[in-house]
Each structure stands twice: as C-alpha cells, then as structure tokens.
Length: 230
Image (tube, rainbow, N blue to C red; front, side, top):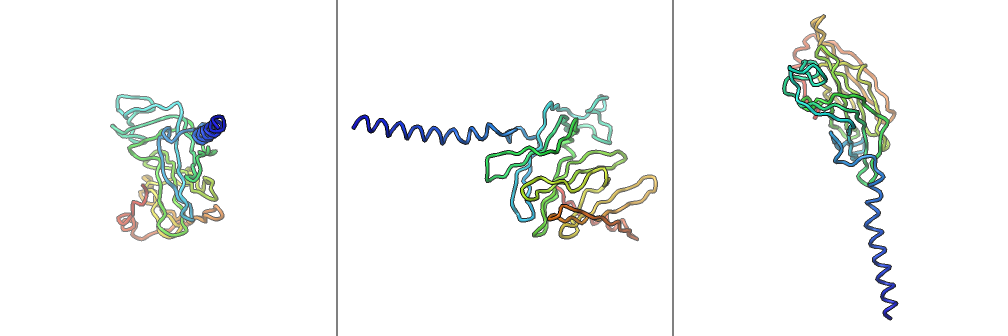
C-alpha cells in the first residue's frame, strides 16, 4: 500500500511540475517580454478583437533634448524641442493575441529611429465606428513642421501596413471624419496655404484611396480640427 501511494504522489507532483513549467517554457520562446517594450498599445481590429502591440528596441539610448548638444539629442525644433524626452535605437513592432502566450515578431523594423516621447511619435487613432479598426501610427519628422507616419492595423490577426509615411506628409495629425475615413492637413510655408487629404481605408482588402478637397475657408476647418489621436 505504501508503494502504491508513493507512485500516486510522484505522479501528481510530476503533473504539477509539468503544468507549472509549461507557461514558463512558452514564455521563454517569445522574442521579447512585455517589460522590454518602450511603447505599448491595445489595438482592436475591425471586429473589436483586441491585440497588444509592442514597440521594442535594442541598442537604446535615452536623453533630454538640449541646445548644447550637436548629436541625435539636439534640440533643433524639427525633431525635438529643448527638454523633450528622447530615445533612439533599433525598434521592431511585435503583436500579442491575449488569448495566447505567444508574442509574435512582425516584419516592421525601424533602424536608428528617434522616438520623441514628449511628442508621442508612436500613437494611435482609435476606432469611432463599429467595423472600423484602430490605427497605429509610427511617425517621424520630415522638417518644415511636417510629419510622416506609417499606418498600421490588425487584419486577420496580422499587423498590416496601409500607408507609408513619406507619401502623406502632414502638419495636422489624422482626424476621423467618418467610418474608415480620415483627414490630414499640411501647411506649405512657400505657398502660405493649407492642403488637405481625405483618406478612405478598406480594412477588409487592405487598400486605401485619397482625395484632396479644397476649402474656401480652411481656417474654419482647422479651428474645428478634432484631436482623435492618443
């Protein structure tokens, strides 16, 4: 009887040990831990399914922008103002379906990226309509008060890029003007006028189209501009 109980106890302990080790083993396979992410968001797809998005870097440096510096942390107004919190490094986007323990590395990589945390250069534009996915933007300065931003969203469980930042320079970050419809604005100092772009996204097909409206009173449009980004 003693031998019988020893076998039972050993089996139970073995099962407990296996169960305890399983999550640890799965976590060990992940390319990063959530704590390594410099910027983290929850991004919902068009069906409202949430995913964690991690923006994690290697060879990362941190500094406060200063007018006394002539390197990457210089307060040059284009990329940073004096006192801005800055990071630089090689960054990659990762996704995590909360229903699993696996963190997936994407193909989106930013080498020597300057992350201005004060300006919140990695941001989201949350959905405002049913059937509209949240958008993730990875922005960068283009000079003369312009920004570019790569647009991403979750499609069929995969992080998908819908816009390349260098094709859509803007001075005003996107506002939502309808279901899957966005608007940006860019000021041209040479022309001394504003240019507007309306973007329509098809999240099912991963396509987008643009129109360029002209307004008789652009100032009225700008005064009513909504801060939809976060």
